[in-house]
Image 1 (cartoon, rainbow, N blue to C red):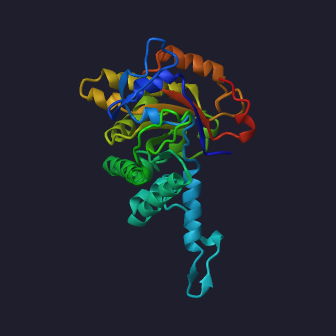
Image 2: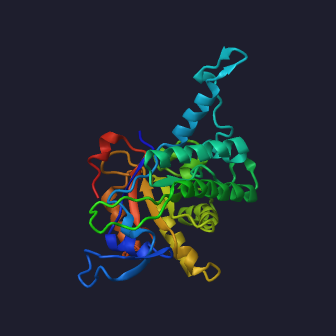
Length: 323
């Protein structure tokens, strides 16, 4: 299995539309014959983006290995074995439990630094498993953990970012910016019962529909992370069609709410990565073609979801996934 995500952007014009509020740079859209290289757009270093942008991958695995290495030190002249190393302190929170301590936050920062140093353009926050109701924490405590997750990643990104002018002769430009994707896990991950691997969610709240329940599940976390202005919101390992639809309907509803600043909703790139059982189906059995058709029906101009991807599936299937 792989924790990494492959993102497929729907259209180059959608990237241009999203990229707002940072720099004014020239942009020549090959899909738009009326555009010109002199046309100006306020954009996030679009002119210096490489053709392939690298995400980090397996963040929790890397954090776990760092904990093992830190334990493999001599203590009282006795070598500590990897098998004796501690797991993340709260199973329900998994790697997000490191946000609870200063030492844990230092480990997260070091993890982000490792990925940026290795060449990743985008780091995902250690918030995938940070769910409300976990460990019976009050919601305000979880809010703080989510905010800290973005702050740590942004601080690391700042260290590795540098702006430079694009060489017009360089067909494959370098990207010296580093970005942050705020990670949101699926509902099944919050249950810690493996249901994200089959997408068979039982009734969440018998008083309301499953769709409304899933919208409620994602709403507060999405809003808290949005308020930290990450470069992207990443819904990860979504195993079923109904949860994808819930995310889309949630964003539509948020855009309609008058109490949310419009720039807050327009700022980030949004992608959804799906967990698949093979090269054709989501974990719940929905065909990818059916999923993408529904996605196009609900968001025909890609104004909500700017990219889709695949994660947590076998590499054997990654070559035959059909969009």
